[in-house]
Image 1 (cartoon, chains in turn cyan, red):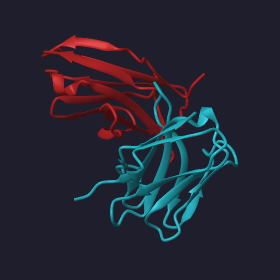
Image 2 (cartoon, chains in turn yellow, orange; image 1 turned 60 degrees about the horizontal axis):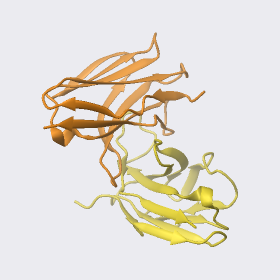
Image 3 (spheres, one colour; image 1 turned 120 degrees about the vertical axis):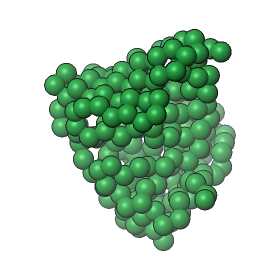
Length: 116
Length: 110
């Protein structure tokens, strides 16, 4: 079956611009996670959705970052006034129910964001 | 100091070697320990999931957790060139928030 998909696969933008990154989770998965992976680092937690609501957004670095999941399926990560330091791979993952202690998170291939 | 420390490598071994990958951590609340494999330009893929201390084996892979030392390991037996990837340790106290190590790059030479 289809895995987690993310679009675009690559995004180049200029400093100060607005970008949207999209995640399509595995069908039926209620939990969705966003991570940011900088070069040479592991994924860093940003936000977790259970259904339509953000259960934990403590990883969002500042108020320029915002994410939505209006119908409990597709999610969009939005970054305003992009900065060069936002350049990274943004990963999305989904899991069946979320919060399950031994539940597997399935990752998408990521969106590579480059801010010039 | 980071909550999870992992040597970034790279680690280069000949085909057929036993590979040992390790992480240390500082948060004694961590109870769930995972190893992910990440190929270049791909998302991480879960390899092993272990609860608390002890060993878990799956094919050529063995995960070990020593909570008293705050130290976890992944062993790969009979390593293959297809095992060449970045290996990420990850852990959590409970629920959903997962903390990852920086990853170790592994190269297995044919």
